[in-house]
Image (cartoon, rainbow, N blue to C red; front, top):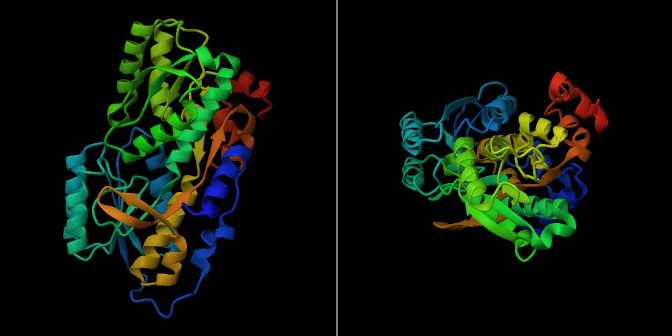
Length: 371
């Protein structure tokens, strides 16, 4: 990662404030008229393949924002061919094959299984269709990658959990509820978290959550409670908000009324409400509009042969198991707690205060000054 992006990412995580990336020459790139006439016009079709619906972000933010930006960048002429695999890798393979058969101009891919999709990525390349990996680093000959700084996400989660445990952390037993083993991001989240947790807490149990499903997290947490005892769990590292929901349900079903600090990721509305009420300690806020819009800028620039603009949008380099030095853009993240809800998800237009502070949460919102 470049010093510019890393510096901004760490700064954002520490200060919990949003910043512009224009200083790194990234977000302003779409305004450039750097190249001569483009090699292809605005009448383009971009395939968008998203992985699942358990996480509400994909249907609520990524898909509509990406589609709107493609239309904006192409004067309303560009089209998006969209499909969601619903956590089924075989379904996604079939969806990708259809896009190859339909001869879309490019594919933006968020893989269900980063390894299993590699042959399809190769087929697309052989057909002359570039593939941009979105959110998860797919294997195979991808053209570029856009995601968040995943290790930083884990670091922010781990650091927040250690801080929440305070002086008791040395003797604290925690449970790690990681993400799906088929998602390469989950490994990076875990690595980042471990860099903060190692030597500071006792990791009593650790689980992977198949397909990121809350029900699977709930079952794993129920097993941990049975083995450790409901009163012997000082905190839970939860890789995202859906997983956190399953963890919380298992704890509450076991009769735990004073919930330990539980982390999350994605700033889902229900998670923000749980943070307000104190059920969940924190989440990681990631600007999906910034990610989706930058992906749209990236793919349009590449299709139209605007190489200088494309290079400006992909200044980082990452490695996958099958490819070294993939051009990339890594978007910074923010630790979301009770103290900065208004400055983050509300200020950025993710949610209105009225969305968060429904009747059930009205008193909790008043208590933290959210109104």
